[in-house]
Amino acid sequence: MIEQFSIAGSTKETKYQSLLKALASLLKDEPDLIANMANVSAAIKEVFGFLWVGFYLVRGEELVLGPFQGSIACSRIKKGKGVCGASWKNEKSIIVPDVSQFLGHIACSSLSESEIVIPIFKNNNITGVLDIDSEHLNHFDETDEKYLSQIVEML
Image (cartoon, rainbow, N blue to C red; front, top):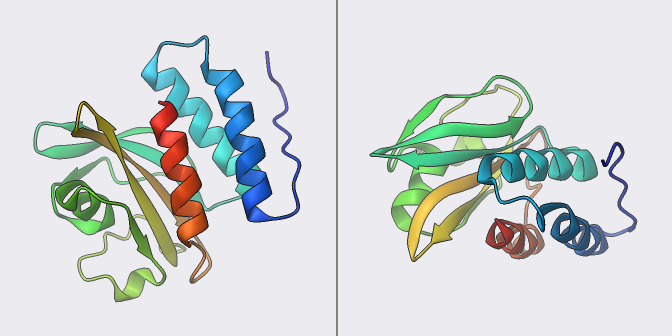
């Protein structure tokens, strides 16, 4: 059992590289998606200290809250609504440097300043999204998108 999740690295990229290796080991023997999402969200939050890290799962025409780390969150998001719903509808990752500038942003927390959403694909269909919020403006970039996309592929 892993009680402490420690990642070495001084740059964002080296932290992600270490995280990928650690998650591969952690997830390899666990077939349950919810258990793996719970551990992935905890690991990402622990390594990077983001405000909120979690998953929304496609259920009909809505995204429904899945495993997460952080404060209470929105339970359901319609397709095309907010950053998560837009990522689902457009089938692509979205980086929002300033959530106040995103038309239709859903403010689950007033502390959120920037956001990244990565869609999860299975058999060419989106089954959910990874949503990460930061209390800092311009917190996310292409490095985050690259490695977070690799993490969701592991699921």
